[in-house]
Each structure stands twice: as C-alpha cells, then as structure tokens.
Image (cartoon, rainbow over all chains, first blue to last red; front, side):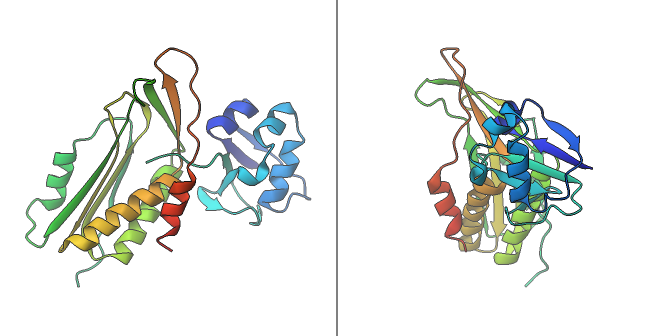
Amino acid sequence: MVKLRYFAWVRERIGKAEEDIVLPAEVMSVRDLLLWLKERDEGYANALQHPEAIRVAINQEHADHNEPVGSAREIALFPPMTGG
Amino acid sequence: MSARIEPIVRVQAEDFDAAQEIARLTAGRTDIGAVVTFSGLCRDENGALSALELEHYPGMAEAEISRIANEATERWPLTGLTVIHRYGMMRPGDNIVLVVAASSHRQAAFEAASFLMDFLKTRAPFWKREHRADGTPGEWVAAKEEDDAAQARWR
C-alpha cells in the first residue's frame, strides 16, 4: 500500500488530494505508475495526458521517471513548481 | 574557516519582517561583513490580479528548502542563512519569500542568495494560482523556461 498525493492542477483534475492504493506488480518505475494511473478514468487521463511533464516525489524527495517505486510509502504527483 | 552553519528554514502562512530576520542573524556577531537580503512580493500584473494563492506540499517544502539551503552552505563560506517561504492567500504587495545570506565578504552572500532563489523557483514544492481582479477564475501559473535556465547555470 502506498499513499499517493496530488497537488495543484493534478489534484484538481484527479478530483482528490490523496489516496491509498495497492500498486499492481507490473508497476515498477515512476513512468509505469504514471501510465497505469492515466488509464484509470477520465480525471486521471486529463491530469496525466502529458506524463513526461509531471513531476514526482518519492517519500518527499524529487524522483525522475526512471526511478523504481519499490517500497515507497508516499508518492506525490504535481506540475512543475512555481514557488519563490 | 569556521564550521558550516545550520540554516534557518521556515514555511509559514504568517508574514515575516525582513529587518527582524536580518537582526536575528547578525545579533552579537562581529564576523559578518556582508548581508544580502532578497524579498519576493506578490504583484498585481498591472491591476489584473487581486491575489495569488500559494499551495505547498507540507513536509516536503521544509525538507527540500533545507536541502537547497544546506547545499548553499557547502558551496559558499556563509556565516548565516535564513529562508522563509509563505503559503496561502497573498494580496498584491504582500511578502512571499525571504532569503537572508550572511558572510564575511559580499561575493559569497550575493551568490548564495541568487542560488537559493533559482533553486526555490524550480525545486521547492509550491504552486501559484492567480485570482483575477475582475472575479473570473484565475489560472495556475505556468513554470517558466527561463527559471529552469537560471537554475542550470549553477551546475
């Protein structure tokens, strides 16, 4: 079980801020996760239509799309950041 | 050279006072020759915006800013460093972000403050949403390529 967290327009399009989910065994990498989520329903498809543009953090640290999701406790998906 | 300092990092809804934060870093010190302060403020884009709303990732925001601040203290001989980033609703003219970098000499303080801001823009988990003055729904602010380029120059 992993906690998925969504921020900004990713959160709005998916329609929730977080959820606990059991990932299927074939979801090995961040990229796999994005492609798998995208198929879930229209909201996810809309949020993740350009998966390469989505930024991801694993256990609150930036992760690139090749990184394994492995035993992550928390994975966050969000748009490029606009702080500062 | 003295030991590496521990940066002060705060992520908060409340406003901050730049003068007070400078005083906090320099009080009782005689080794600081330079303090560079950067404040980021909410602007109204020529009257188009009534507010900016900042969403953040609690926990990661503090952790990521601390990682960036610690990297700055490794790269430059800083004698003090404070980074404060606000979240929530900002009105035009409100403070959003503060960096105070102190060092013996100005070059390190200038460069560290600039480095901090370039990395906060592109790596700190905050997202700005516009609220428009005419009441129509505002957009999420898009990330700028020039911010990525500004970050890349520190590699």
